[in-house]
Length: 186
Image (cartoon, rainbow, N blue to C red):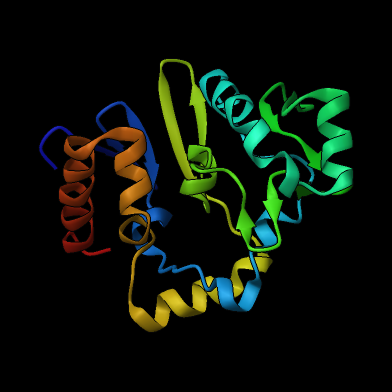
């Protein structure tokens, strides 16, 4: 673990705190079984940045016809995002959790927000650092079962979105850190 450090169940990779569950838990979305319920349930939308909000707003004219009437009404009223009770910017939702941008065949956005791409990893700002945690949710039990069957660790399943968010060099350091952690007797 060259520049990485370990603090109990937390590994430091660059300036990112990574919970060991991300390395030790097997996971692979099984969208055929769950139907993308993570986009339909929950008490808030997906976390977004100001840049992502601008990107969604730029796409709005193109995707508007694919949005259902309830989603259009929510967006007309509050915009494509809002501030949740914890003070985070999140995508607008319809009712009890349906993402406004979910169409009959999945996300209508050309590129999903990075928080959606990273799910079930959730990112949290911790001062100058970033923390990554595995969000365990019963609706993802099929993803856990498929990941275990394939023996696919969560961090490997999410290789592409982790690289999108943190870069190739950071991901290479994560892989090295994970190998060292697993070989140390976990």
